[in-house]
View 1 (cartoon, one colour):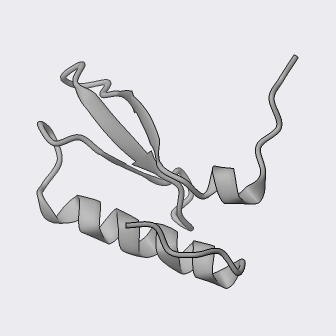
View 2 (cartoon, helix red, strand yellow; view 1 turned 90 degrees about the vertical axis):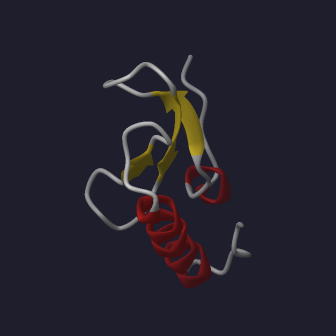
Length: 68
C-alpha cells in the first residue's frame, strides 16, 4: 500500500543515492520539472544553496515555514 505524503512532507528534501558516484545526495523538490539533486561529490558547490532557495520559495507560496 502506498504511503500518502502531506504537501509539507513533499516539499522537504529527500536523502537518496547518487546515480553517478553512489554517494549520498539530497533531492530538493522545486518548480523545476524534476526538482534538483545535490551530490557533494558530483555537483557544483553553488547548486545546493540554489536548490534550497527554490524549494523554500515553493514552501512559502503554500504557507509553510522555510527550511534551512
